[in-house]
Length: 305
Image 1: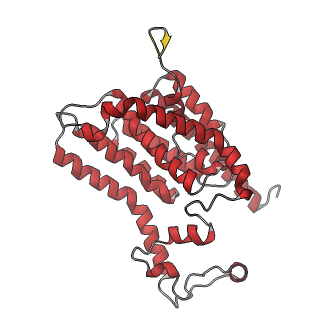
Image 2: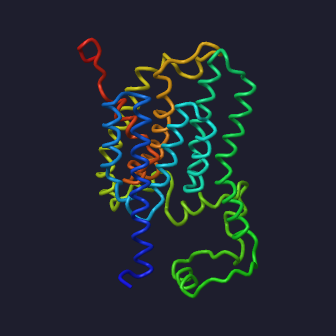
Image 3: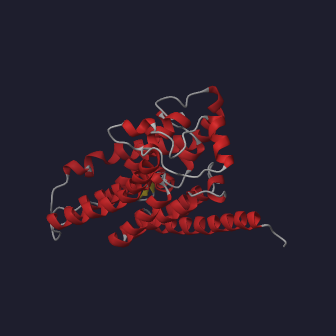
């Protein structure tokens, strides 16, 4: 046989990731066309295709699939297909644990619809709550699964010799052996515990000399996103901030861009204070394209404004 089984699996994974990356780029281009214009769409797509975290999109990893499901969901949400968009957000949650963050766009979309005079407030709230709950379902179901593995001791789970050896060398806690520390928490979620203990994720823990290369690689993207968010919020905060909306008055076109800016602000905060790296600032979950378009200086009446 020309290729071994492992080589076929590796090649298939790379080709699948390239295909899903292409789908994600097309979806991002169409999404940016709705929110901005053709020039911004091309700019956003180029920034998405060529960024410091490009390796995550071609390696055997979930980033390409997550980006494709998220961008397709956002595009469908912008054209009014809330139900299909929710399905893609759920698929994103099955791929990555932080996929439930996409539910924030559903909540914002409910604010927009609530501001339109022909929409029923009760119907909007009911449908939105159901869709948000579905977006959280994959994360909660997986946490229930990990709880059953690590919080119910003396389960007869067979582990290979390689797994037992690695666990012994690195001090890992195996499923079925005693109760893990995080099981005693008020909210027994494993994700935060794993990040803190094994990945050393925490407030300012990432600020170490050994991480200097990652800071340098992330600096351009962080600067772009930070500058764009600041300029956008400074310019538009008094025009459409959600707390100023009233039912029946509608929202302006630029209000559709606000959730992407707020989303970027949250991720930037996490990046700067918890984990600043090429993955955090260059991954598909960060709306770099929209931020780049926001940072562009608009031209009106032949003059820069």
